[in-house]
Image: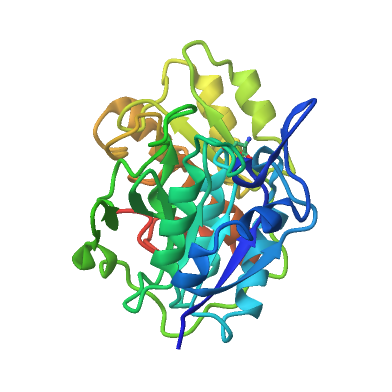
Length: 337
Ligand code: ASP
């Protein structure tokens, strides 16, 4: 029996067409290009599902993450795996959000895209699509949300976009790759099996509508800007702090703005601006001051994963305290406990 895979096309460069205003997604266009790739049928029996409307991923919002999750969940009994074609700009956010929502699905969900459209002569799209399809259709599948790009399969909730122009556009700086596609596709089973999954799929949220933001610290950031960023109706904030999670402590007003927000129930998660390494709020006085005003540690989570996790938890949990606790635990391998 051939393996069955649903290819879900959300938009993004991979399926775009050249227009007078630059590359743009066009309904039906990718399907016509896939007809010119009969080799895909040798890999799997696939169906193409298009998001309506197709989106440049810069325009994707949390409600679109939920729509993609629903498309997958509705088809879980009919397919052996899923490929999600997505723009590269926010693919790491979508991969993270899907990883939280699709826990327990136990099917491969492989996000991919490309830097150059499939329609172009010189493109990375063919290789990314073909290999993502092979991974989604594998007899011994990687049963989690992953991201394939530039020859590497990464854990979705650990991935970040690191290059605006290179074919190796994604990395997973705090976690080993799941697989490498060279002459063979070599899966590191020890790494894959390290994420604990629930036995059954977790229910999808009704809505993904929590009010969440991200703020990157910079030298000279005023208390006023911080207070404005934390104003109601904000429910959660990813604070992109320095190094081990540090922030300036010489401005009492800045710390008061944070303390007032956490006292109101805003969940503030500290992530580092550094690409590698982890937050340790006990390492410096400039970190422990944040702990004292109610900030929690994002450990080695990417900003993308922390933001998607905040949206997911604050949209689904009645109790903010529950969401706070879960932010510091690994739900699908997104952080090192
Ligand atoms: N702007 C495009 C997108 O994210 C870029 C890409 O796909 O590479 O949809």
